[in-house]
Length: 166
Length: 221
Image 1 (tube, chains in turn brown, green):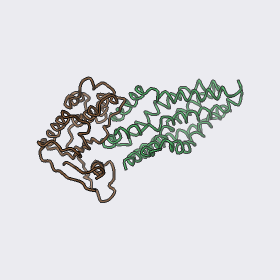
Image 2 (cartoon, chains in turn red, orange):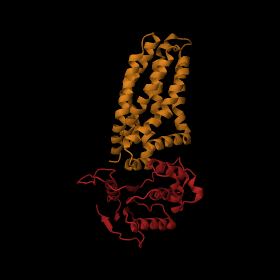
Image 3 (cartoon, chains in turn purple, yellow):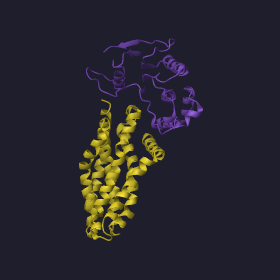
């Protein structure tokens, strides 16, 4: 599902409500008692600026009980240059930070992805890499709710576009 | 358990990267205590009488220095969102963060307290009581302060509010901690105030991670 809408239309807020990060201001939200495991990539990258890309992802592996050996393949998949992997995240470009944040999607397969402006900061190659990742996820039966001002790549399967209005 | 260890390890790694931030509390502690010593007459017996209060207040203020950033950095970079959505209960996350804070801030103060206390004229027989009191009291400061830090993490000027809320809440620990050393200095049994401190610690350890986790969830609303 591709959520679109003007600035302030509530795309990010809706995504946060869906993730369970915030309560809806009005209306009723019914939760599945057995919710799907989800990946969340918000506006902020969830990367500590003092740690390197590898150290950040290692932490998330350890926190989620996953093997830390998955970090290198995940960064390979997102094509983060080798020279950028061991540098403090604060020294990376916006696109490199975004690639590192998106690498979390590869660390562990989860059926639901909630992605808030995932293309922010990505260059043409980065967008193509992300499109490949999303396409694989959807073809594998996964669900993704994506907010983006940019059009999503056209070859993605079964994309529904919703526009939020104020 | 692995999630708790992961957070604890991350806190230690971050402390190594941002050394200045974590060296500030022990440095502040030493400077404040030393200034009291320098500000009074040499061998003034009043200094030994006031030493427990000086050491406890200095430890309290030193611990407050790093409390504001305890959850705020994670909120700002988006880590807190991921921690909230993880399979590990947020209370466990909060507990790991608070224990990490104590290990990096409170524990060095406990270790520094003994030589500083001797410097202020505290009798060597009273020093173990002082150290025991701080060993029980500094985790209380981290836990109670961490709860307030969680409560104010989403507020734009939470840092100003933090000491105003923490100081009254930590007063009982301060009273029992200094009371224990005073009792030891007078040759009385210091057991009772130390037991009260232990009770505050157990209560804080049991309740505060849960309350702090609820406060952290509210940071997004």
